[in-house]
Image 1 (cartoon, rainbow over the protein chains, first blue to last red):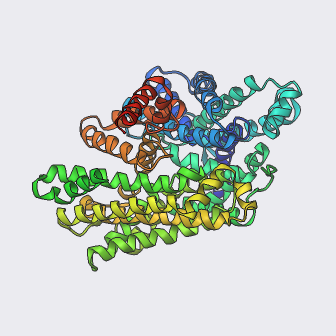
Image 2: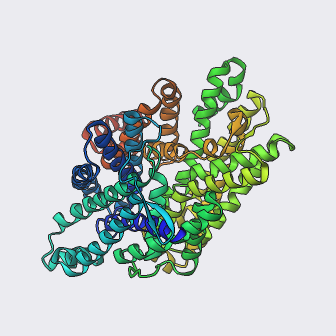
Length: 286
Length: 312
């Protein structure tokens, strides 16, 4: 039914938007290659499952940290370089954006060269389950549960734990956070890597419910961006809620006219920018 | 100055002795010059990163294809430019009132949005995914593209030297201060952005015949945003002729490599963009002031001056 499908895609959207929000809100990099990280995670998991016959959740346990490490290192090397060499904060953000653009092409073309352009899939929890008179595949229900649980867990992590509070502090005001004892040099690459990890988690959920291919990234990047704006730039909980909102909306539109889903999102985006650019929970004023 | 005239004469007479293949290559170089120079027109001085060139180019392709079937080629091209002016005006009015990040985000997503929207319209209104493009002679395409290129370069030059250009620079350096000085920053930004889109749209319209067949995925291709940006960053965004240098280098190389190494060359270009952004954000042309600081060039220049003084 529309609701379950909407919640499932909503959960995925929430995860990717939170990931992007971490990367932009804290590390100040608008990672337009975010979708490519998702694609990379999805294809790596696929390769591990199909080629090495690894049990899918185990493949996630391998790919997730790998992607985290990749994000961490990328920030440590590339984006820190850009930040240090730029004359102003604005220039740094602009250059980081362009570098992410370049990264988009690098990752995309590497993936196509490595895995080809055809769609890929694997089977996991394909059994059918009956809930309230409608049949669902188990993997969709499991994915939904994982998405919601992960989202809530992450929210709790952000609000209750010390590291979580440090992250939020770093997102609100990096220099002051540094003065308060937050190790900014560690925090920024950590958050960037964490964003990549969330991307991989989302990729796992996508992979067990539908097919993946090398070109799937761009769409997810744009959706993540729209959700992030909807939730409010700089608000990670906002991205969580915004993701579910957009997921349900998308599911409804998809029922009537699949090709108009992204245009519908963009329409919402346009209205949002016109009426309330700060989104639902946004705070940043600069 | 004479140098430029020479180049111009060379280009104008090229079709006579150039040969079909090289004429096509030259058209591509001119196209990329148009795209990168018009990108720099706005994003260079202001620092607002537009990721929209491919979107305007694609819209130009579609306007050109649809109108060019019935109307004269020049009219279709002009319509492509005007259509994109309107679209850019809309985009600018919506996003340029806010921080640069909204602008970058919006222009980035514009491509996929237009792709899917036009796909929907084509399937449901026109009946099929793609359409055939009217034919046009190679000479006509060449000369019109050359014309667009000249107009773009002249416009870029004039804007740069005008009060608008000054306003753009001050916005880029400190937007708040610029606003306090009385500059209507939103108006300046929107106007310049819209003007830059004209040339991108016109270029798209004239390139349509060369594609023979188009569909939303052919017309709207992220590569058409990437290449101009790569060229501009590589060549240098601050100076006037920087993007031209970048365009010539990469356009020629791309034509070469895309058939032999389809995805490898894009991979390499992506790596080049990253390297250039990190180490050479002012581009190749930006190296010149840095080189001038080295003693060698200063010495050569000084010796030249001494000889001059000795003569008089």
